[in-house]
Amino acid sequence: MSKQDLELVSVSKRYGRTTAVDAINYHFKSESYTCLLGPSGCGKSSTLRMIAGHESVSDGAILLAGRNISNLPPAQRGTAMMFQNYALFPHLSVLDNVAFSLKMKGVDTVKRHAQAREMLDLVDLTDLAERLPDQLSGGQQQRVALARALITRPQVLLLDEPLSALDPFLRVRMRAELRKLQKELGISFIHVTHGQDEALALADEIIVMNNAVIEQAGPARDVFNSPKTQFVAQFMGGHNVIALPAGHFAVRADAVSVTEPSKGAVEGQVIAVEYQGTHVSLSARIAGDQEVLALIPDSKFYNNPHHPGDRIGLHWDANNQHELTA
Image (cartoon, rainbow, N blue to C red):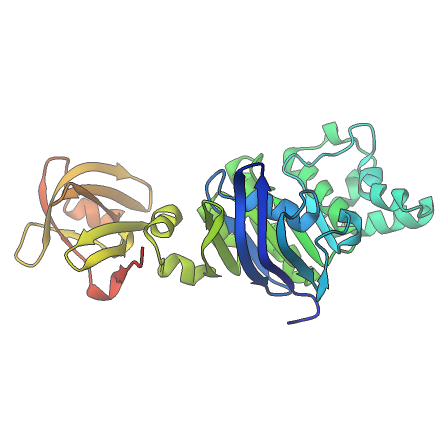
């Protein structure tokens, strides 16, 4: 284990009789960007809050740099949390918001303001140091919250759905800024999201949670390209889950081609066609009342368009048919 690695060892969280996190194990690599991904109620936010020290651990241990931090207060863990709502103090300037934790530690004004200005420079907000939070845009407020978390020099930065309050255009821009910042700082980021696109864009590794356990974890491309279970294939999106005599299989939607009905093809009936800019999404119903989605380049589709009600043939290469274990 690297001296900065974070590890969860059989970590559980119970609220009365409800188990929110059930004996999960995971080794986060140092200097990595990891996304905890899953639907509401799967346990991802409880996991993050236990790492931060904002929720107690019911069972198990959280180790950082080989030290058990499970029972330490948040300020002594070597982690910092960036909250979903940013939690900025409305009556304090941007500079004083960023410097607040140092003030609580008794750092003198000159020194804490100098460190706060370093953080503001890092997130490109130096010119707004004297403004109040309500004079900032959503993206600027987010960067203030990020600078405030980073001023504690954490070994691990924890982010709880930090992009959810932003509009779609700014969300994409901030994804790039977060990724760039993580690489520049060389510390671990652990980011909770329910957005598959967000996780794929940001993460070195993705942890997919479902019903209080880790359903699958690993490098982002592996989780997307090789889902192990029906849940992961469907939740990550972009896959069809098809029941065949030999079992259940995931087939990427962009690997499905559409032709006229022919021998050797899976026959189906078009039920929906949706233009999505660079491609057309075509849904068809096949035997067993199963629905198959095909993503077709727009130019290819419009050279030979199909419409709801049409009988079609569906093809995919056997190499793109991935067997599911559950």
